[in-house]
Image (cartoon, rainbow, N blue to C red; front, side, top):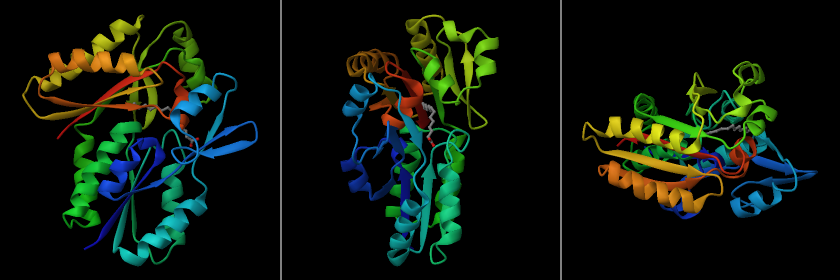
Length: 278
Ligand code: MYR
C-alpha cells in the first residue's frame, strides 16, 4: 500500500526534512500591496519580518488548483493520500483539501484537521510520514493522528493582540470585553479556534506558566517531543530551550518559527511551545 503524505506550509517543516520524509507541501499565500508570495517557496521568514515592518500583509489559503494539481500527480503513483492541515477554525485550507478530493476523481484523499498549526501540525505530518514509509494505509494513519490529538498541547503569547484582532482570528468582542488589548494573555486552541487561556501580565510569567505545564506532563517520565516556536526571536528561543532542557530532561526539543502566514496574524516577538507524547 503506497500512501502519500501532504501538509501545508504552516507546519514550517524544513525543506530537507520534508524531502527526507517524503512529505509534500502546499503553500499558503501572503500578499503585500498587490504582490502575492507562496510562503516557504518564494518568501522566506527573514524577508517576511523585514517587509512586515513597513506594511501589514494579508494571507490566503492555497488556490484550489494547487491542491488539484498535487493530488492529480500523487494519485498516479499512490493508492491513497493523507493531507494534514492547519485548524479549520482559522483558515479555509482544510476545506480546500476536501474540495480538491471531490474534484480529483482518481485520488482518494483523507483530509486531517490538525485543529492547531505550526510545528505541532508538523508533528502529525512526521508521524504520518514514518507510518507511510512503513507501509501503513490511510485509515491506519488517520486513526493514529486522531489518537495523537488527545496528547497534543500548545500555548502561545503575542507581543500585541492587534495582529490577531485585525486578522479576525481572535474575537474582538472577547478581546475588548476582557480588556485584553492591554495585557499579554496566554492563548491556545479550543474547538479549533484561538481563545485566551489565562490572563498573564508579563512575558516571563507566561513562559514560566507554559514551562510548568510541560513539566507536569513530563513528570510521568513519558517520552515527549516539544517545539519552541518564535517569531523572529531566535536568541530568546535558544535560551528558553536551555532552561527547559534542565527542567525536562526527558523531552526532545526542536526550535521552529512562526513563518510568514502565521507571523502575519501573531506579529513579531510572539513565542509558543507545543508538545506531544512520542
Ligand atoms: C489563511 O489566510 O487562510 C491563513 C490564516 C492563518 C491564521 C493564523 C492565526 C494564528 C495561528 C496561531 C498558531 C499558533 C500555534 C502554536
